[in-house]
Length: 113
Image (cartoon, rainbow, N blue to C red; front, side, top):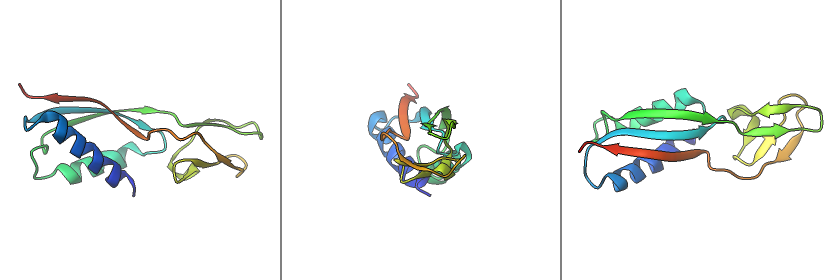
């Protein structure tokens, strides 16, 4: 579950940006290859009992897309990717290399003022 390591990095960056102030909101964009329930579960697990335990996580999804020679064109899900840059077409099983993209992007850290 690589979501945990991504979220651990996210939390570290949020703590750095907040400079000790309580964090009210964290807003992120995540790839369609990351299941939102897994992202939220990792966030809750890693912030439990910490200064960020009451932080609200807002998440929006962006599609990681594949256009395959078989005619498939669409968003990929977690099970369609290997290591984030290798895709398996969900229609025909052909393996393709994708351009590497960030799977999780931090958009906003809102602190209590």
